[in-house]
Image 1 (cartoon, rainbow, N blue to C red):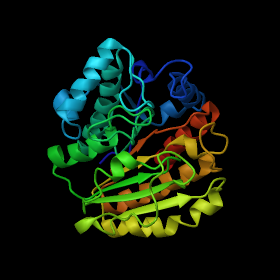
Image 2: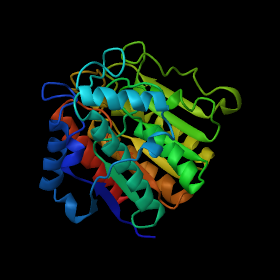
Image 3: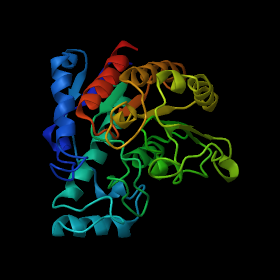
Image 4: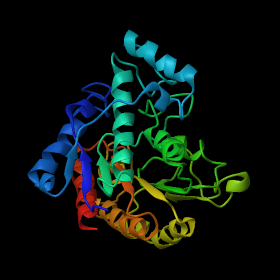
Amino acid sequence: MTEKTCVMLGDELADYHFGQDHPFGPMRYWAFKEEFEQRGLANQVSLCSPQMATESQLQLFHTQEYIDKVKVLSVMGSGYLDYGDTPARKGIYQAACTVVGTVLKTVDLIMAGECQHGFIPIAGLHHATRQSAAGFCVFNDCGIAIEYLRHTYKLQRIAYIDIDAHHGDGVFYSFETDPDLCVVDFHQDGNTLYPGTGFMGETGRGSAAGTKLNIPLPPYSTDNGAKKFWQNAESFIADARPEFILLQCGADSLDGDPLTQLGLSSGFHAYVATRLCALATMYCNGRLIALGGGGYNLENIKAAWNDVINALCEK
């Protein structure tokens, strides 16, 4: 098994955006890439190019009716894919398919043993549901990756860890009754931030009760406050004995994001990545993918995502 980290780079990923003036604009990718190159991280990783998902891969998670809706509005280039948060623009279907396909390509590389860890900067679109867009997320690459790992590689025990400021509701509720998906979600308290979900009492339903861990943080929480909860989270993940780990490492939980009110630093993101590498080594042959997620302060994106890559390389 190689110990390389693969990083997915390509102009196609920058095309997943909603306009130059939108918070989720194309400069997010370019800011990340500029810092990635300035740090010389390309010399420490394996660089891979994006690819598009097939419609059958989208169908692993999304309904055909919703996929068709995205296709139509992508051609029209107007309207919304949800109730007003996620605008349609020309070509958004192809751009969203590229995000999904790139994540699945990373899964394939890891499962083939060509790399051990992977990082995709424009990915982690955790709000989309099976039948709708939500919160700037067209297709839920996280959910599709979970279904893909099960369908293609017959893995069952998967751990999904989310440290984006927003609760990963599209993943959480889609798998709320799934006992084999371990979810650990650090986020700003839903009483104070979109999507208003992810409370401590939500731990899974039915046979999945007790397999989900929500950790809502009060506004202005710092690294020290978040780390107090990490040991319990780490034990929770270890108890699940995952066969694959997905990390959604949104940079909007860092201090200074214009849309959120948490006070974390990129050090917390690096710490979580380092600890998850140790768990991945222990339980799943090192198999770990980190997804960029949210983040609307370009300096925070530069710091958080590249610190995560550095942690993946250093283990």
